[in-house]
Length: 414
Image (cartoon, rainbow, N blue to C red):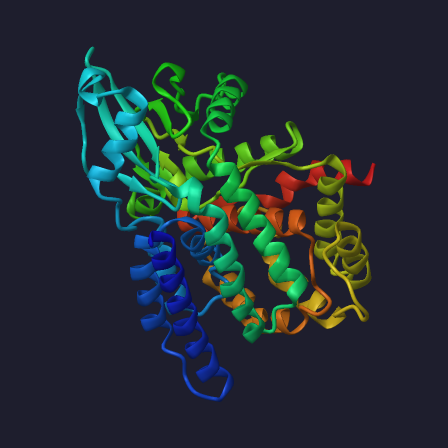
C-alpha cells in the first residue's frame, strides 16, 4: 500500500509538470512558481529519488526558469522532516534503546535531505554528536522509486533534451542514491579526508564515530557552523576567506588526489566561528582520471584562446559532443562569456553580467543538444563543477582564475 501511494504521488507530480510544459509548447505561459511550489510540497514529503532529482535540477541556476529554480532550491534547506516516531524506531533498532545511550536526542532535525536527516544528540558523558539517520524503509523502496522517476524524466523531451542525456542523468542519479545509502563508505571517506587535510588550517572535516555508527546511522562529532547560504549577508573578509579555501580545496582534490566531492549543494558547507570552511557530507565522492583533467584543461585553454575548432576537439576528447556539425558560433559566444572570469587579475564571481550572458546562451545550448550529449561520468563532473561554481557566486568570490589555472593548463600541454 505504501509503495502504491508513493507511485501515485510521483505520477501526480509528473502530470502537473507535463501540463506546465505542454502550455509552454502550445504558446502559453507556464506558471513556474506554482509548479515549483507543488513540487516542493510533494517531494519534501516523498523523499528519495524524486527529491534528489529536484535538488540536482535546482543547481542548474543558469538553465532553469528562475521561479522554478528558486522553489526547487528550497528543497536543499526547508524539506519537510520525517516524523520523529519513525526516526526513533530506526535509532532504537540500531542502539537497542536510545535512552540507554544518549542523555538527549533533539526530535527536530537541524538538516533534512533526500535520503536522511540529521539530529543533534548528547551522550551520557555529555558529548554532543550529530546522528545522520537514513529514512525508514528507503532502501526497500529505492528501486521502485527509481523506476517511477525514470518515467517522470521522460518529460525532459519537452525541453528537447536528447534521450541519451536523459539516460545519462538517470544513471548518475541512480548511482548517487545507491551510494548514499552506504553509510560505511561515507564514514571511510570522512576518515580519509580528515587525514588528508589534517594540516590545512582553514578546513574542517567532522570526525566519524564508528562506535555509534551502523548501517543506517552515521555518527559524527558536532561541528557547529553558519551554512554557506547564510554567509551571503556576512562580512566580506569571511566570505573571501571561505571562497579562497573552497577554491584551493577543489584544486587540491582534483589535481593532487584525483577525486571530487560530487554533492555541491550549499547545505553541505558552512563556516565555523573561526572562519574555517566546514564540509559536512561526504556521501558522494567520485574519482576523476588524469586523462579527463588534462582534457578539461585543454578545453579551457581553447576557450580562453577563443578557438572554436580547438574547443570542439577538446569536447570530442571529453566525450562531450556527438553527432554531426560542430556548433562553432555557440562555441565563440560561450568563449566570450566564460573568458570574463579568466581575465587577468581578480574577477568578481558575483558579477551579474556573466550570469546574464550564460542565461541568454542557455536556449542555444538546449537547441544544440542533439550534438552535445556527454556520457554519464562527464555529465556528473560537469554538474558538480557547475554546483561549486554557484557556491563561489553566492559567496561573492573574487579570485584570480587566470593565475590559478595557468600551471594546470601548462601541465595539460606537457
